[in-house]
Image (cartoon, rainbow, N blue to C red; front, side):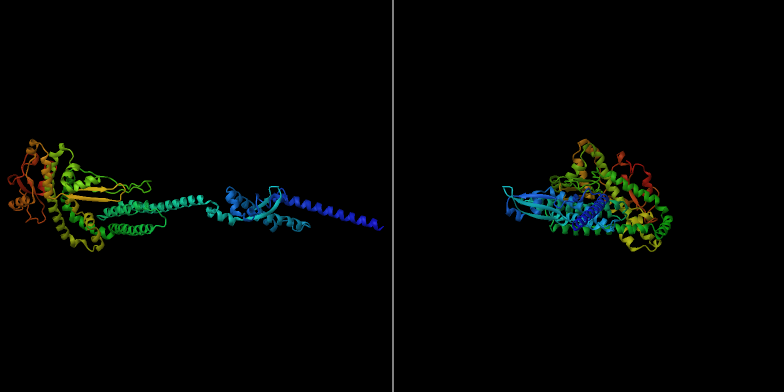
Length: 544
C-alpha cells in the first residue's frame, strides 16, 4: 500500500510540474510575441571574441588595443550599444506596465528579462589565450559602454600610431587655422556688406571718401595679414580683431551721423526754412543754373579721364567680396616703376597718361586756356555765393549746430544755393600705385594751378608741328590780366551797363569780343567786361 501511494504521489507531482511548465511555456510564447523577440538569446552577452597567443598579451589587452587593431569595429560597437539600449528600453517598459504581472509564472519571465537586460548593458569582448596546441589557457572580459566610445570619437589620436597621430594633429591644426581665417574673412565681409548697403544714403560731403579710406585700411591691415598668420594661437588674431572693432566703430559713427542729418532734412523744421527760402531764391535760379553749366564745362575741358569704376581686393581664394568705390577722376593706376618715374617728371607723365594722342593736342590746348578762365570765374562766383549766404542768415531761424558742422554745403544746396565745391576749383591729376598683394599703396597728385597749366600748355605746344603751333599760339588769360580789364571798364558790364556799384554781388566775366574760335586774340583790345547774364547770351562762350 505504501509503495502504491508513493507512486501515486510522485505521479501527481510530475503532472503538476507538467501543468506548471505548460503554463510557463504558454506565458513565455505570449511574452516573446508581445516583445517581438524570437527567443531570449536575441541579445548576446558577448559581442566579439578575440584570440591572443601569449599570457602577456592577454594581461595587457584592453579596449584601446582592441579598437586600434580593429578600427572598423568602433562604429560597429556604437551601433550595437545603441541597439542594445533600444532592446533594454523595450524590456524596461514591459516590466513597468504589462497584463501578465498576476500570472503565477511571471517571476520566471522576470528572471529571463533581467538576464537579457544584463546582456544589453554593454558591448563585451571575450579575449582568449589559446596555446599553439589549442588549449584554452586563460581569458578575460572587456566591457565597453557609450562613454568609452565617446572618448575615442572625441580624441581619435588614442587609436593612432605615432605617425598617424602626427599627421592627424597637423591636419587638425590646418583645419582650425582655416576655420579661424574664414571667421575673420566673414567679419571683413560683414563690414564691407554694411558699408555697401549704407553708402547710397550718405549725404554729408566727404563721407563716402572717409568710408573708402577705412575700407582700404581694412584690406591693408586685415585681409593681407589674415592669410599670412600661420598659427591659431598667434597674438595677431587679437590685434586684427581689435582693429576691426575700432574700424567698425568709426564706420558706424560716420553712418549714424549721416542718418541723423538726413532725418533733420525730412523734418518739419527744415521744411519751414526751405519754404521760406524758395521765394527768396527764385531770383537766383538762373544764376544757379549758369554756375552749374560752368561746373559741368570744367569736366569737358580738363584732359582725358582715366577712371576705374571699382576696386577689388585680390585674394588668392576669392574669400573677400569686392568693394566698389568712387575713384578720383583723372586717376592713372600705374606700376611701381612708372610711379617712380612720374614723381621725377610729373608733367611729362601727365602728358603721357592723360594726353596720349597728338591728334587732339590743338583742341586740348584750347581747352586748357579756357580752363584757366573758367576756374577764375568760378572762384569769383564762389565768393558771391558766400555773400548771399550771409545775407540769408536772418531767414534761416535756428538751425541745429550739428547740421552746419557736418553738412553745411548740403544744407545750403537743399535750400537752392549753387554749390561750388572746392574740389572743382582744385583740378588735379593723380597717379596711384597699389602692390599686387595690396600691402603697399602710394599716390601723388599734380595740382593744376595757373602756373602748372601754363607749363602744361608749353609742353603740349612743343610737340606740335610749326604750322600747328603758329595756329594755336595765344596769350594765357592770367588773373592779373582779368583784373586789369575789369578795372579798365570800371567793373561795369559793357553790354547792359550793370555794375558792382548797382549790384554788389554781380558776377563779372572777361569776354573775347571776337571769339577765340573765330581767331580772336587774348589782348586788351579784344577783351571786354560782361556780366554773367550778357556773357551767357553769347553762344560761343561755353560751346566754342
